[in-house]
Image (cartoon, rainbow, N blue to C red):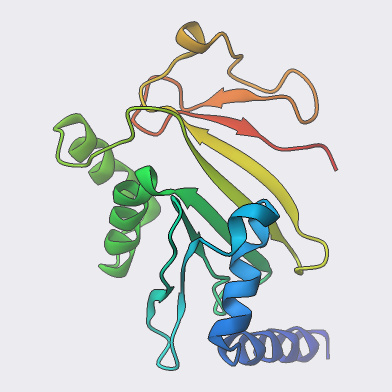
Length: 182
């Protein structure tokens, strides 16, 4: 019975997610942003054939991603356009069937070779995620490729709940992680 309930819950969620209008996907995707930035953001979401593509072209420097109806829970993200080559390359490699490890290895090789253009200045990713939209929490990820604890003065682990720290220091995907305490 428990398995049946879990299965029914998953199927209900998937069906709801797949039926979201583009307007609802846009409204949800921009929730990670400050209200003043929401109207002018570009949004990527799912068309009626479940193809992930731009569903709203914006005029500011932010790109938002709608919740994936095939994944459990709620997760939307927005990022500065300077991160788009990095993000788009990850999506392309995932579409090719590459594993997370393979994606990171390929992107690192390409970033080191100068084929994958990484931002020259700090660029932020906003992630709003949770089991449901109503209980979702916001975190910030400030990408600063190749930065280290020494170059930023940040620790390599959080010193307290919600404190910023540098993750993957010295790598192409080095970033400041800020996850507020719940």
